[in-house]
Image (cartoon, rainbow over all chains, first blue to last red; front, side):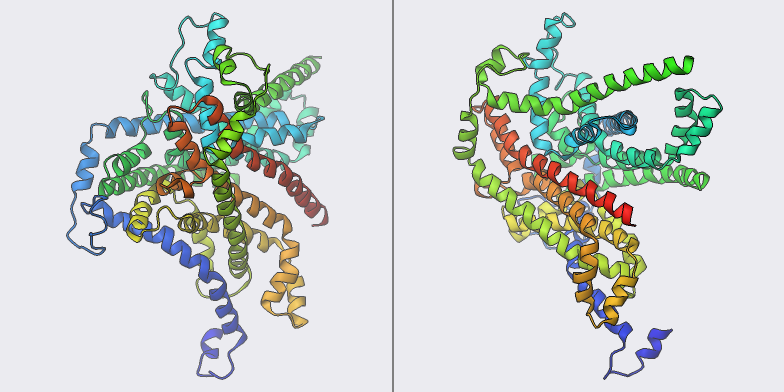
Length: 310
Length: 279
């Protein structure tokens, strides 16, 4: 209401509120322009590309605003023999990686929760996998898991295996390796969230339980775990979303071989393998739609959980 | 009695657990360093040997000069530092506007910013690739810089805006009363109070830009504009390159970010704890 009064043709003296608003737009301008140009526009343009037959080579000649849409790209995506297997692979990969990440993060957090000498250093080292460049650690893992590498040699020397396994490109080992890599790389993320939540649990809950004679394991299951429910659910949501969209790790660790060809690899196959921009865009759109559908279901359950916690 | 036994079992399990987790977390880094430092023949002949019998720095020299990692290092540093500086500058101002100033669309902005951060890179990759090809911006470090900024600004704005909201507005108001301009208040009052938050945003955005793989890999074609991530792909795909060289390259890419992390982490925890005591 105030704003309407002030804008009533008093042009000579701008009110304080107007000045504040102008300053706000000025401060927000550069980031908003960048984000609009390099995220929102590409997402919108992806929608356009998905409905047009665009190849990389013809891209420069393609008009930006052509209107005759086609379903060809989606037909290509869905009729591709790899599509349904890739969708299944993506779900297996995403679900197992997410669960492993959270389980390891929870274990690491419980280990470091109580004070002990060197705790700060241990905590820093736990975070290393998460901060290192993915390319560098992916290649280290590839060499470690190589049939002639340290792990296979050690397994043969100790008599556990007779023959080296190709755990990077043989099904189902490739998926195990990939999930292990994800668990290793992202457990620190869960660890950070869970440690912060653990510290917020009031001590008197534990003391009361101790007086009542609860054992440490009982205290974990009846106090700690219920208190962590919400943060675990949030972690699941975030990790699920990001793993579903993960491309780098799959591309670098197993290269999509041995039954690890996920949907994001299909985007890359269309775009770089076949220079088929339209099909790549359609694939990305399908990926996004599947994820959105899964998240909608999850959110229903999550809201209920949140309401319970309040 | 049983409580005591259980406690002792848990204490033992904890020690074993900590050692196990430490070993697993650190081992790939240790192996990377080992394989880069010992002559290749030893890695191949005796893969399970965990201590080098001979140290050989030649791989580092070769990677740095012959494979141009010196150049890639400079490119990565340029991109990461500029991304960090511009993200901190722009997102401080924008986050301040969202947290403190009244304008139309404010509540919309504060809600939408996190959503944008959630947009997955792979969904943007195809249109960005097409867009940059059409505009002729591929193979250009500054083109890549813009992409990185678009990725880091939403995070930066989100983190700083939630931090600014926790600061008491009284101090800023006092500054305004004393005749300071808004920008003066941001510079003299808000920024000094936000040092810990700004440190964490800096660290985070530096890390994102330094480690970024997908866009560097898709966009950069000529070795002069390679970043370390892109350069590593080149070296690994070269059949004539040994494990030793690849791991030397990996160490060059990893070491700076780990060093920065270890230094900053102390500052971060210090900042957070002292802020907590005062708060």
